[in-house]
Length: 139
Image (cartoon, rainbow, N blue to C red; front, side, top):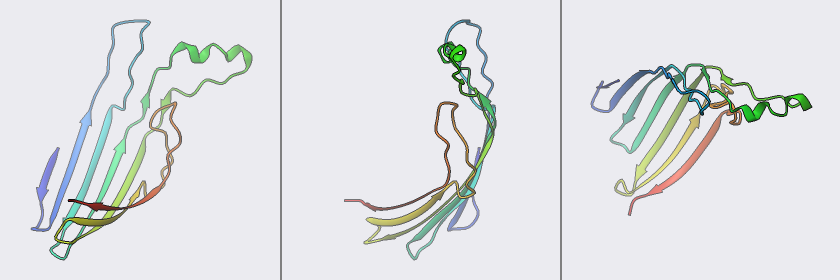
């Protein structure tokens, strides 16, 4: 990973991770995870109280081996979940404003702004866009 200072008020970051999971034991729970993950973004913090961030995340496809119990009801017509989760992209935005001598902040963020509907695990729910707002107080 790398972080850099572009200007006095603008920083950036990028990170790449590669992982390969192997296992020699049989008949035990197996792990799964994407082989490649990448993220990059910019953060700004201005003297007038405003701050913000834009970030992009890429997650590669992954296969999560499922427990054999999911296949017990297949003869009865049940459909087991797909063990493969496709790759997906996330773009997030955040804008905040600090006030009251930097002890309070109001902020608004958009998670998955591209609405790349995806699952992060075969048993998880489909995730779409979310817009969040909050007020933070530091006492």
